[in-house]
Amino acid sequence: MIKELMVEGVFAENTYFYIDSHSKAGFIIDPGAQAGLIYDTVMQNGWHIERILLTHGHFDHFGAAEILREKLAAPIFIYHEESRYLTDTALNLSGNTMQPIVVKHYEELSDGEIIRLRHNSGFYLKVIHTPGHTPGSVTYYSPEEKAAFVGDLFYQHGPGLTNFPGGNRNVLENTIINKIFTLPDDTLLLSGHSSPITIGEEKSLLLR
Image 1 (spheres, rainbow, N blue to C red):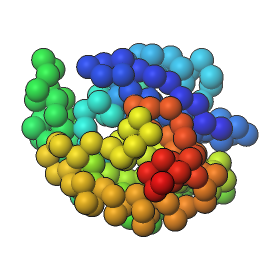
Image 2: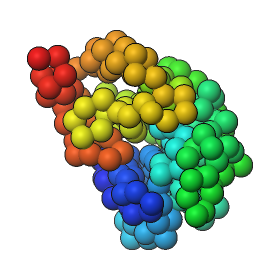
Image 3: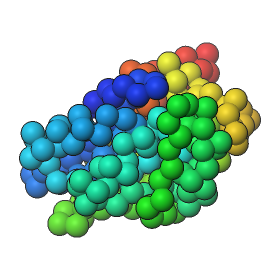
């Protein structure tokens, strides 16, 4: 089960819940802001969050992570190459705001890693390193749900922005073609700042 919650901080951002409907356990992906709203959503639905997963290290995708880590007793995970963004306000872009944000408590992920629920090993996400927006951006892929949580790899049905520290347009385009467009065409791309679109639909826009 996938649920989307738009949160409002400096920017509006899509936070996602990936929940096993049987056990009601699962993951939060990119809790960008409004920790109270996210926490209340978890409590109201009776969900048990095992991990907080970050697609990349920009503050609008992790602004609520530390508070939720404490309130839900759920560890924060980020790709190993991206972890430096969490403690550097210039890299994570929060230094340009009135409230610089850092995350000091996190664990690291590797490319190809499988993230499973403790009591349901068949419920999982695969970590795919998808650089370009930032060097350590990842996509969390669910073959079962035919869904990919892509962070800012795509934006408004096009490639993500690359004008931030560590961004690279050539790398991003290579990532999209060789790592995302090789997934099934009916896979739903769930991004941080735009509406869902399938890989097939995205291909028709970008490759025509």
